[in-house]
Amino acid sequence: MKIITFFFISFLAFSTILAQDTFSILAVDEATGEIGSAGASCLDDTQFPGSGGAFIISDILPGRGAIHTQSFYIAANQTNARLRMEAGDSPFEIIGWLTTNDVQGNSSQRQYGVVDFDDNGVGRSMAFTGVNCLDYKGQRLGPNYAIQGNILIGPEILDSMEARFLSATGTLAERLMYSLQGANVPGADSRCLNEGVSSLSAFVRVARPDDSEDDLYLDLNVPFTAFGVEPITELQNLFDEWLLTSLDEMEGTTNVVRVFPNPATTMIEIDLGEITPADQTFITIYSVNGKLVKTEKLIQPKTQLEISELVENNMYFYRINSSEKTIANGKFIKIK
Image 1 (cartoon, rainbow, N blue to C red):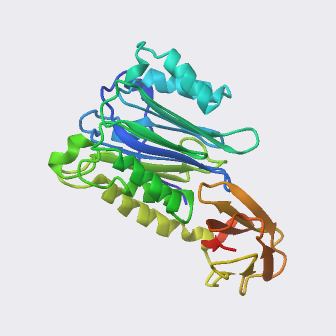
Image 2: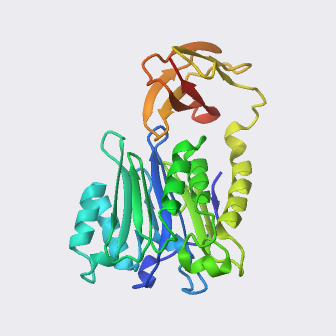
């Protein structure tokens, strides 16, 4: 289900938006090929009409990667970042080029986050925080995600976002929304402390590999809020509505799919119940950082799957797809 809640923005219309400070997360899902982007800021669309608020920092290239350009935002830097990604540069190379070729010659004020897939479909990430970004400033990196923020009340904002992303279950969209809630505290962006909110605008976006750039699988934005209204909470409300409508992937399925035991040792059993496996029914298992660790085609309604090669005392997520539709997802813990 594709819901677009914000109109298309021409980034070139805004040559400079000073101090576009924010907290944000980018991530890719190797199991699905999805690319996600979420963030919030104490600047909004009323201060810079037509910007969409925090939304302006987000640039997703479906099937390839995503870029966040924040702190003393300049559209030309974001355009250059996109051009480097389109040219095939890695996140490391993109940030190296941007810091060397800042359009105002002052990369020390900029903050960037970049994620993508390499030629083998493996996630990569890189971030940059200039020394002259406003405190608190910082970043957190993992194999498939980049979290960054500046003018924050402290490092706990980034720590909370990272911890929640790594512990979340479900789809990439759900994990991004859960991560963003980690910054839903008054003054997460410190300029909003007096108003008792984290920020003034917030967004979450996810692109599937075959999406067009102006029609993403998930594209939700809260460009501004009334005084004292929390935009991340408003975004969560939009997300919950979207999640209900997106259940068309499970349409017509009242059947309960079971994956057990949990915790598991050397084997799990997959019981599809009344579902007869189609030619393209698979279970995919991936680690908490989104890395694909196992894929198995399901031929029978009940299948035993060997998992002894998985690392002990770790959590894993699974997704069961049938004819490209998700029929179940969940998590289990692998023990001895």
